[in-house]
Image 1 (tube, rainbow, N blue to C red):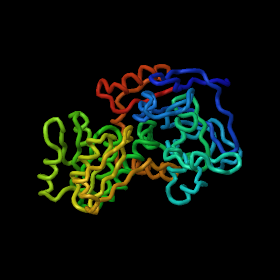
Image 2: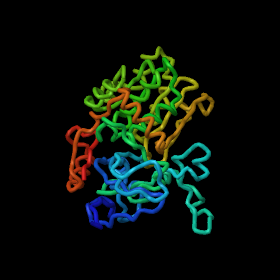
Image 3: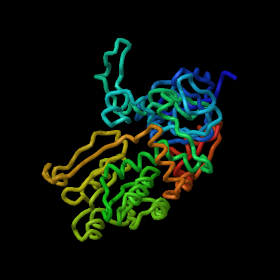
Image 4: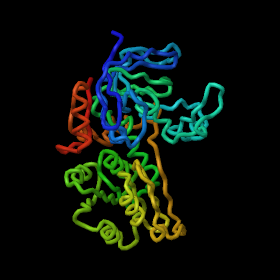
Length: 364
């Protein structure tokens, strides 16, 4: 068999299933047969034309699968082994990687070794479904496989580790960037899959009060299960006023913004105490404005941190350790399962947020 099915971006508003050649395996690569993958909110940005990718690119970036073939340089793995790889699959050879930011791996280098596009694209470490063919297919080629393949521990199902490649790594990085200390008060804005993982991450980091904000009561109920101590439906209360009441007027130690809108970014800034940290995870499709008043004209000792989810096999190993030890159970985030043949229908459901969808599992 030389061909496979793959979901590709054709044009704004069109991601469809086509036949593609199964990739050839280079010496540093691994060919992974996908057993489960997902549709992510970023894929919907691609579908809507809000995030540009090349025409005919296979989309998707959350792989769980079985090694089909290994490149000659890839050691310590075997064909038939169950693995995941992070949505961010760095080479660990670039300047950003060696400077401690492997998610920013992708300076564009031309054949003569010089840089194009000023040598930098902030999302280039995210390769699957962005720079190279992704995971919504029967097979995916994992580059720099030695650095990126993470064996799945015995006893863990696909659904238990499905969030590790992106959603869990992203949400937990939001909590890590918030510099949460034991006993902190943290506000998490938006309880979609990433926000729910940020809520779980804040609990694991030691926050004593976690205030989850959303307009959907079902998602707020899920946030409670993952560690939120207080839930606020923004349709019913003034979120900033409520946070100030709950903190005795002091403000929160940290906030995590998980939606990517001006309104939620601004609220995440307004709820902070002097010296507080805003951890931003949202993907913004328009320019942001920082209100002078709430930023204290730049004199409030605030910290604003952004992140692209960490990848690499060590990050994946640690996340799966958390799952295996019972630290978090993210299986309930998978609310719908579709076959790859039905992926266009799955995109329609997910893009329009029908039927209480949180995450859609796709099984070739």
